[in-house]
Image (cartoon, rainbow, N blue to C red; front, side):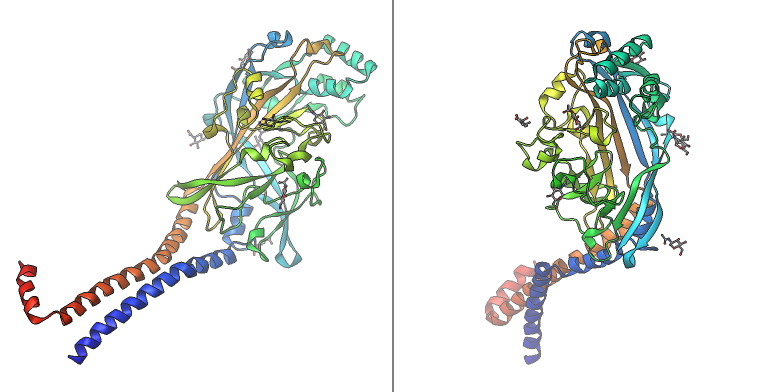
Length: 481
Ligand SMILES: *[C@@H]1O[C@H](CO)[C@@H](O)[C@H](O)[C@H]1NC(C)=O
Ligand SMILES: *[C@@H]1O[C@H](CO)[C@@H](O)[C@H](O)[C@H]1NC(C)=O
Ligand SMILES: *[C@@H]1O[C@H](CO)[C@@H](O)[C@H](O)[C@H]1NC(C)=O
Ligand SMILES: *[C@@H]1O[C@H](CO)[C@@H](O)[C@H](O)[C@H]1NC(C)=O
Ligand SMILES: *[C@@H]1O[C@H](CO)[C@@H](O)[C@H](O)[C@H]1NC(C)=O
Ligand SMILES: *[C@@H]1O[C@H](CO)[C@@H](O)[C@H](O)[C@H]1NC(C)=O
Ligand SMILES: *[C@@H]1O[C@H](CO)[C@@H](O)[C@H](O)[C@H]1NC(C)=O
């Protein structure tokens, strides 16, 4: 009899113990903290770590796709009609972007590097060859006209030259020329007047097999949240194109790597030299990519909102005080004075007037937003798409008959979609980590389950001990039947 009750009581004690332990483990997050601190230690930029290898040479294939807007009513536009465009694309390039000239500094807390990008045309993922013709705004001409419009003599000389050379507001060029550059007669002539202009024009001119400047990154050795964060770009820790210190800040990584242990309430900052500014993503929803759990971060409308919606954006009005509408960014200063305006494709999240101004704009969240799906524990990118549209600001310039009666417009030229999906080898590695995390996360629940079972056993045993013989005997047949 004493032995039996000892067993019964120890069942009770263990039941309580397991329950308390399980609940304590859940509340204290011991296991998730342990896993997180392990990951934090591994994810630093240090020669030999997996994180360094993936940073130096991204294993997943990256594709850069271009969608051009072919102008269909150029004559009517010059008469003051609303432009009509047809989207043509994609023209797809495989993008290779290794980090080069990698040098560790300051006891391994920083690393300097350049990010060399090479683009190789992929014909079977493209709508047509690079020799396809696109009619679009003559950006060199628009740039030159804007540059000299206030000098009567220069303007009349150049206007006469343009008439002779049959150069107008629109031009028809191949996809290859528009992207990678072509020699422009007008620019060659104007070079004598405005020496800082290049006589070759292309939206991605000099961008193949070259880099966007010298970077110094933090390695994350001191603080995991600094992993791959940009310290300086071209030797400077801030920009000088914008009119406030806040807007000139270089925030976050270069968008290709993120720190581990990502939380839902953080602003995921990244600096984009294409955009000439830092931007951030906010948590949107949970996603699963190739079986790996992730958080989807996307750019909130606030990032490109105008000053009245987001006062922090006041500094993006250039020159100071000259604000454009929501959803667009004047990057003229960082594009050698060309009247270039950036936006999301099809003016997604921009003011309705920009969408209405051009026939053929159809903003859609799924296709046109910038998203990053990221595994929160490791910070590894599962899938991402950076989407940007390059536009030109056009207006009637009275000194140039070439501009006819054109409306004042933000004119879409091309949009790009730079995307990546995690490769299968990385998925396998991540699966192991995710499974480990899941097993550990389940331990407290297993303990609680055990506690409940033991508790039930304990109660049954107690009842049996207390219950008078007669009732127990009456019950037995019931249970066995
Ligand atoms: C990393 O180590 C390898 C071999 O030990 C060496 O060849 C390479 O130069 C190192 N890389 C850097 C950036 O120090
Ligand atoms: C970019 O350069 C690489 C090699 O340097 C070359 O193979 C590729 O064709 C070039 N791409 C374009 C679009 O010119
Ligand atoms: C495209 O062509 C390349 C070879 O040039 C091939 O490796 C690849 O599998 C092809 N892709 C598709 C989608 O057909
Ligand atoms: C773009 O428009 C021009 C002029 O209408 C036309 O010649 C050209 O074929 C179009 N491009 C494509 C790829 O359809
Ligand atoms: C950079 O981050 C700071 C906060 O750390 C923020 O106030 C500022 O607006 C950010 N700037 C840009 C351009 O994102
Ligand atoms: C864009 O910025 C440039 C440089 O500050 C400025 O000259 C130009 O007027 C701006 N464009 C518009 C449309 O405000
Ligand atoms: C700013 O954007 C909001 C929403 O797009 C719009 O209602 C407002 O008129 C804009 N303000 C200015 C000054 O452009």
